[in-house]
Every structure is written in structure tokens, then in C-alpha cells.
Image (cartoon, rainbow, N blue to C red; front, side, top):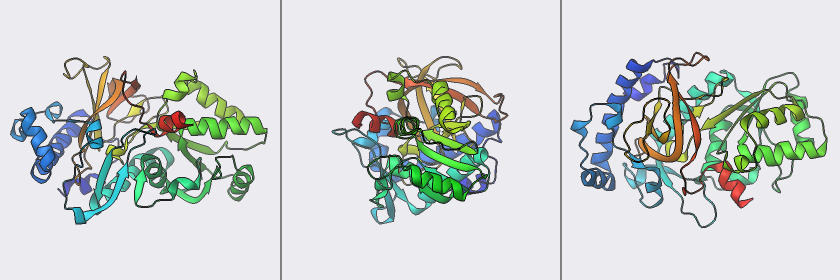
Length: 360
């Protein structure tokens, strides 16, 4: 399945509907066939559902797994000796977590894809990076949590990395100012999970009264809004509040999950989440699971061209969303753009930001 690597030469938002769908259908059919042959539990699931690869005619026909299946089954499509990394999803105490098994090729493609997507927003140059987290989260280099994997993935974009929080989760104002002094006048990349940015960066910075100048900063954050929504903090208030304490104005949310690492959905300047050429979203009616028309809410299904070491290429999430349009976002990026409306009722909390907030 070497055609994936050739696709890295394309711009991440360069393809419009018909060309993109043609590529995705070809790639996802091959991935479905590959996993059916290589992963016995996946093969049994497809047989039980009556799904046959030869009957796949459209993107919407690609069989999907519920994302929660990775919490109960060890799904892998490569021999055990080829597994180089196991990632786990975020979860509150007592929750079971997903386990995602990566071989060398899949892990490398995750990194390459992430670079292509994020660079479209930050530029190709590696920037000085302020990580709004604690170095304690990176203690275990073999069993990556979703939080650690997110930090590690985005660290590729940093030329000089600085942790904004101590191991006690206190704001390191001295360290931050020393970092900013070293890179005075230069663009700076910030990365963190939404609740942690709010609680341990914005709130602490506001309480300290210490001046920090991040007018040249670019913040990328993600991991869920559930806790902040319960505190009545809107995305607009989030952005305005951060701007008021440090002057930052370029703030991008993203949507993603450990089960499809690499294929994140970045938020553009107009507040829309975008599907790149490496992935797509399908919204399904909550009662029938049939595809919903554009503009109608439903359950989000995500497809990714990356996973070869495990059958995670087509997943039904536990999130509700709505497709807003395709190929016509004012930002100029082609592909579908959409909005996440929230978690499905009674679904477990699972985003890095939200699970940390629940424990916090």
C-alpha cells in the first residue's frame, strides 16, 4: 500500500470533493481488505455484520467500528514482534482505556501526516515552543497516554522547547520569561490541552499579575470542551481572555483522537474544523446510522488513510457534530468543514482536556 507516501506530496487541503473521494475510496477499500485478512477479530466482526469488501461502492459503505471497541479488544494487523509502540487513550480513574498498537511504518506516517497538516497553519519553519503542561507527563516513553502522545507529536514543531508548568502544575513564570527573552520578537508556538490552558495558564497568569508578552504567539489546543462548557466558557471568551492577559491572538482548536493519531482536524481562522486529504468525516443519523445530509446533526464517523498496524481506519465516535460545507470555506481550504456539538448523552468522558479536568 505504498500509494499513501505519494499522497504526502499534495497540499493537505488541495483536493476537492470528487478527486478526494476517489482516492479515499480506493485507499480505504484496500485497508479494509488488509485488516480483514490480517486481524482475526476484525474479520469476525465484519462477518457478523455481513459486510463484504467487494460490496463497497461509496465512501459511506466503508464498514466502521465503534471507537469503544479498542477498550475491550486487542486489535492488531501485524505480528506482535513488529509492534514498536502502544498508545492508550485518556480516561478518568476506573475507566478502561483504548490500546492502539503501532508498527514502525504506521508510527512514521502518523508523524509525517501531522507535520503536513499543522504546517499549513504554522508555516514550515520550526518555532520556539512553549508546552503548557508538566514534564512529568512524559515519564514512560513506551506506554504513551493520549496526552503524552499529543505533546510528543506536536513537539516536532518546536526548535527550543520550554515547559510552562512545574511538576507540581504551578506556572513557571521565571522559566517562561527567560524563554521569551531568548526569542524576543520571534513567532512562538504554544501547545496545550484546552482545560489545562485555561486553568493552569490563563487563570494562574491572571492571578499572578505578571506581564507576559505573547503577541507573536500561535496557540494550538485541543482535548475537549466539556468541562469549560460546564463553566460557561465559550470559545470566544476563551480566546478573548487569553488575549487580555498575554496579547495572543492566533488561537487554533483541533479535534482528534488517539485511535486515529496524525489525522487531526484543525480549526481555521473562521472557526471551522477541516478534514484534510488524509481523512474525512461522515455524519450519521443517531437512530438509523444512515448518512445525514449536510447541515443536519448526527454522530460523527471519522475515516483515516493511515492505520495499517490496527483496524482503525473507519470509526464511529461518541461525538455529535454537523457538516457545515465542503470546498467553500472562506479560508480557502478544500474539503469538508464541520462543527462538534458535544458528546453523545451518557458517553464516557474521554478527551485529554476533559478527563484531566474531571480528575482535577
